[in-house]
Image (cartoon, rainbow, N blue to C red; front, top):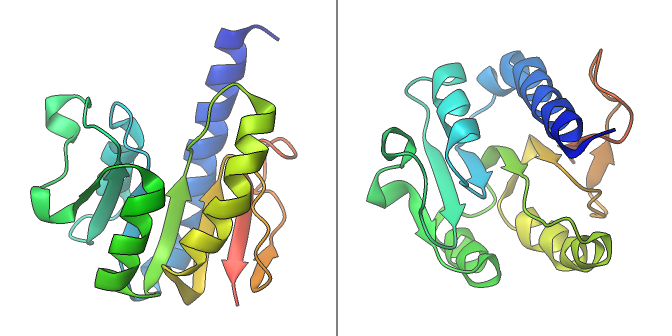
Length: 162
């Protein structure tokens, strides 16, 4: 599979997972968290899916399309290892949905990042909420859910917070 085909498959899986979760998230209180703004495509999709819902974004340095930059009071800037604890102190474990697609093309580095990322995000995850990640995250109180229809196995990882 070419890198382009892989990117397209990942974006389709991401969109399909978010769309699948929409009715479940609508029924839950709490904010939505986007960990990794990038160019803002997913943030923009989340705004369309959940109009009027508080969406907080984490990004090391904003370089998104100008129409896809969150307001300053919904943006946690800086390295994720520092920004996530700041957000946990401000928001607590209240998120209805956490979406993360942090990482690189380096599998070993992604596995290492997943070791601290899951526990860090757990401090933000509300009971009954969902976590959608581009890599496996091992957190004791999270239950891995089956892939939504049409999403290839292990393309995305969907968890329910216990």
